[in-house]
Image 1 (tube, rainbow, N blue to C red):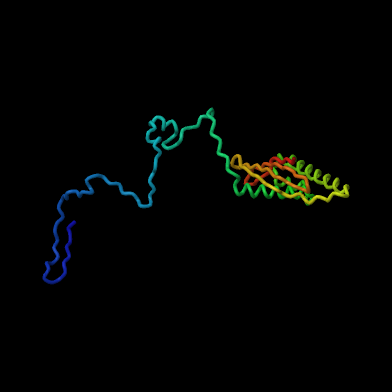
Image 2: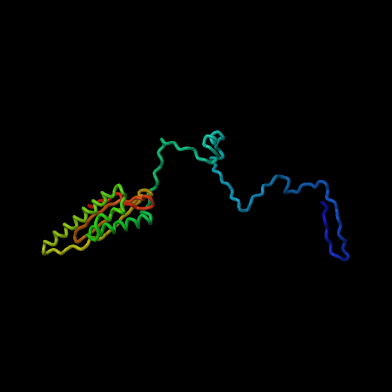
Length: 204
């Protein structure tokens, strides 16, 4: 294809057509092959172990970059214990403790604990709540019979300690007080189908 040179009018030379040489020498940037990458393309960062892995091992694993199958005989390391508890776990525990306090004070029946309990553990959780409400009731009735003693106030929470031994499980220790009597309550909740459910409840 011929080249075209354009020159303005006047004393300058007119347009000239020159033939293209049959073969042009390569430019400096064409001496070696160059791969052009898209500016939006992400580079692959292969792990070093994949590059050093022999081809036979890669074929046995099922492809490049796929980790080898784990040995069932080798125990897996336990997940780290979460310091304190996550925000969702704290909220679930506080809601459950508030409901337990209302049950102990007689403001609601112990059967209401069932909807916040794991189905297979709900009977035990409800039984513990009912037993605690009965103990609080007996203590109040015994205080009323003694004229000199004042009737204790409602059950209240003094302290609440939480820990998350593994993701999806939270344990709590609660210190309760009513009058001159202190109580200890321990509970455990687990994440089941995106909902925190109580699995254990003990009132000491």
